[in-house]
Length: 579
Image 1 (cartoon, one colour):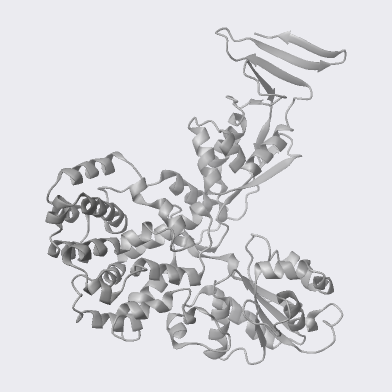
Image 2 (cartoon, one colour; image 1 turned 30 degrees about the vertical axis):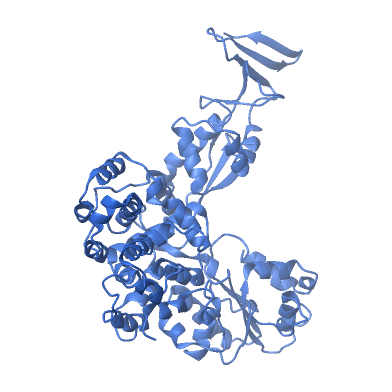
């Protein structure tokens, strides 16, 4: 093997190395293993379960591709911890081709049926199971034989979005650890900063400069390749070694997960790194045979910043990342630099002024890119896209930096919520209550618009509503880093007597809408279709109002606004003008 491209293919989701086998541990997997805190938790549970006087079932739960089987294979083959356990990977193992996954799981867990669980046998079973499969199993007809297991799952809220410590319970037949309680990123005490130990470690595994790293060993051969000065894969690999670039990639991945609510598994993360290092149609031999002009075009197209943002068709991860493409963001500073770029003949100097030292710039100079951009508008456009995208990864701070203030506020609020620091959520609650009053066109903190029959063009009908934030302060978590958390903020609103309460989870999209309403935005039909849970909550909260006793009617389209009140009295209904 003499090309880095071939070795990088092991990262692809379609590679044979991507398929996990609990009973075998490939050397590549051994090298790529990263120890996380959940490993210590699982080891602790296993060690205590071994010494239990009664049978033990350990559920290793999570999502597809999140590393459950990898960790069990590591503990079995490298740590030799699981010799006393029967292991089952529900995602890949079947006892018979004629059996469904539910029937297979029933065979594996038969000793933990309600009628068998206290038979005195000391079974030890570990099952790696996806949450969807576990839910289907419990809800199935067969699941009726596992009421005690079902009760444990309910008590531990395994199928819910809450986070729990995975502590060993010596009085129980069941134990569990849930990979979904962990994320690819952590909240930090700064509040407006998020980091990812796992993603950083994974990138370090790819680019670390030591002989145990097969990628680095193979990269050393790239230096003797005839294409060394113009190979996009070699140069992408070198760019990934830059700490600034790694930090930017972490930020981009986390922003993608938060804004677009996608779950990135370890498997899809490895595939992501292949996709941003190697253009899918790249071939060393074909690239070598290109003429000088076509090679320059292919080089620019195959560079990491373009692979990161310009290929939504490669994977679901890149589809979501492409929505953050800096080319789609406009600001005064960006517009100025685009104008300057388009009128300059010496674009390389502009790159050097705004970007940190990059192997790309040197390669582009050697390709005489200034001349090419003069002669080919298409090349200049491609270079501009590369420049803006590369700046996001490796630009000189302050010149073209674009900060999403709403996103920054949101992650600060998520940290405050998970740290139980309710004082930091005051503005969010204020904006949330304000959005409730403004949703149907209200403009005060006392009256809300209500819909009566057909849409009224000449009159606004409203009611008095008294609501307040409902907060139960907990102990503040002052940890420097929070690893187990929910990526949203739950807010609760009550009537003035706190007898009726309504709660909702605020994700980024809803957070942004609430902030936009604060700044004067008026929700439209599309918003009301996209935020059904918020609409339903508002409708329930409006029932807290005084409309059963009185409503106010206000003319819309006259210069002299008239206001009326329709109210219920002991004599029936009364209607009078109040202004």
